[in-house]
Image 1 (cartoon, rainbow, N blue to C red):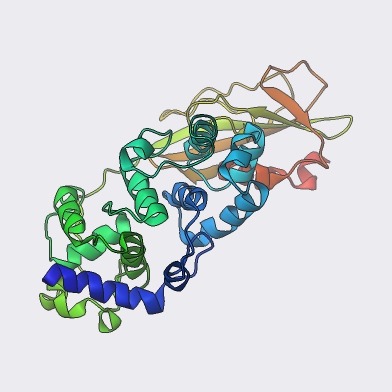
Image 2: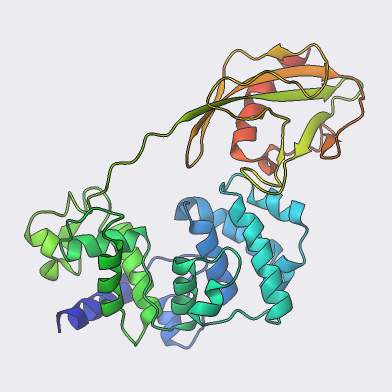
Length: 354
């Protein structure tokens, strides 16, 4: 009975308070028979991994304008997709996005499968994303649990076991709460509640539709749950970036990184390996290299990076297979990943190249 009341109260709140998102079919539209587009749900969920809604909105609109369906995306050039993704980070997502689009286009005639197990077999789709697509796009009662939902459930049931140890217990609660009717709306309602009311800090319990049944609120634990195991300190790695221009026309030397690994298949400035000890300075060719005064700093998921930036004028030299000259009037910093944009920002001053 309590579980049913939680689901009913949450859906009632969602009907009047659902966030308006470019990939979402709201509760009124859904009640009128409008069905979500699985392509848009899938694309948004991939983009939202490790990334906020605020950042994803513009990228989502750009992608769906350029590639309005999965078959269009499947036929896109890898380099175009990577350039459109630049700045969003976690670039393996973009590579898997293309792989998945091509599998769906070729093996499923451009139609997304609806069941959890088949979705889980596709490139780049893990348990959460498979459940979200199955639930939100196809209204199947798959339990969905993201970070927002973990926080809501931890507080709702006053679960003191720290994350990630508590995940199996949290999942049991979500499975039990997920209704057979409107499971997609329920999952989105839980996400919205966590994003707008049951926030990480200073939750707005005074307007929460679940406050009366919240064990965490009753025990005054809403500001301390969920507890989390301490994170390991991130190591710091060091490296060198090399920015060169061709003297006779000012073109910039760029290279495409290997398909696998960090920044895989992205267009970048030539750089050294990244190591926890200062690596040797190994320029891509002999020239009068000068070191820029300040290091460029960037943080990846598992480590911090500090780059020394070197710049030089270069003759029209033979290039490695992965390198190319980019005319200065065609260089778009927005096509570079965030780290390489930082390098360009410090090295693009005309004063350095006079």
